[in-house]
Length: 214
Image (cartoon, rainbow, N blue to C red; front, side, top):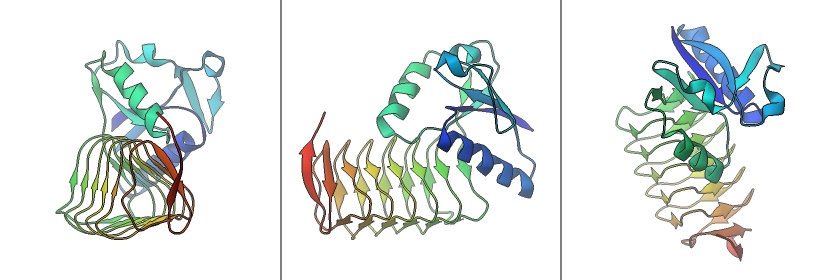
């Protein structure tokens, strides 16, 4: 079995641990060593039978350790990966729940997490460190770029592009051929029918920007 640690120890990190358990129920593949957390007050805690091993320095002398990001916020994911670039011994596997329906013609980078009940049709490209949460659907020829997160029950039609660090809200919907700009947040239940610019928060049906941020 391959050894893996989960970066983070909050809610989504615990969900990732559960996802790995479910993968192992089908085929024993992973031995979860514990959590990595930047908050020193959590070091040594036992959370859902797994220990918080320490901060990122715990990774320094490990050989070919696998790491899963148990954090949903796109910009936080990006900052963590930038910090971990100093370690050359880390592998970032793709973790895909056994119930996921996914075409062999899709292309995945590294560190992607695809949760239970999701459907990814065909000729989809997920770059790196993308989260597809529970019960999402992604249509043909979609391109999701680095660090983006798709929250539960979202529906993404064909030929959509998410630029880097998009945060796509729970139960949000987007029609075909739309592009969402880098760093944009789409609110829960939004219906996206037009391109959205970078670094905005968009809500409503149809979704419209209500504020801009860095």
